[in-house]
Length: 79
Image 1: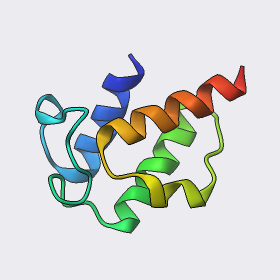
Image 2: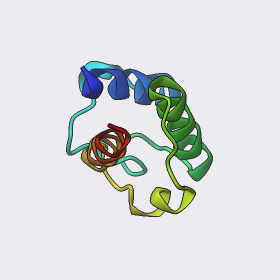
Image 3: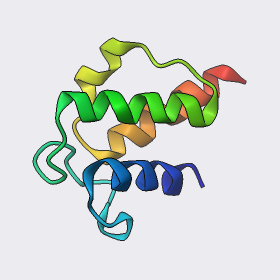
């Protein structure tokens, strides 16, 4: 469920069909995302789940899998 929601957010920002977004998809090289796009994605995840993600986490995001892992870790810490 979380992965599908994140894919939907990524699709909205990148314009790439959500069905084509895989865990190994690279955020910059494959989706063409900029640092501003990544910030928008993080804000959307924060809004969706009511969590706070530190800005420095953006630097470590290379693939969609990294976004899943970050969101999962942040959500787990909110419990």
